[in-house]
Image (cartoon, rainbow, N blue to C red; front, side, top):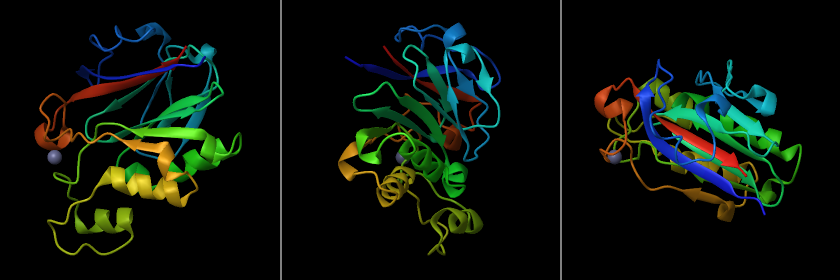
Length: 209
Ligand SMILES: [Zn+2]
């Protein structure tokens, strides 16, 4: 039986490798974790056991078909997307902020996944992220992301709803997508870049046993 262990925990400053206690709850070690440079782009990469401990350059998404490979992604308001196949050992983790979504990371993700199995056989979990309650963008950023004019400067954006709708329009069945409701900006248990301009991040992790 395949089990995907997932976690999102507080970690150290973005610039450090201090992952605090957030790895103690998953069956993996800091040395084994594969992370990504995270450049707010649309590229993903397949990784394997030989990438353990590496930070993969110039990508915002990690996919693997190797059980036991721990994946890690740093977030503080951006959406961590956990992906897993329902019967085969394929899983992944994507960092999706507004720039990555505007750049089409969800399109890259679904194109990549669909090369291997039908999109209906994958599941998606959109983790804690800044909610529509707290997220506004400037006029130009709003246009880039939504593809429409902003009604006014206080018009908010729901990143997870946007991602959910994009994934569905790309062919993912709506029932295969789950959205965490928590807002990282409202909920003080999370770090939030928008709230505090914090240099700290949460570390989203997953590993399939
Ligand atoms: Zn909020």
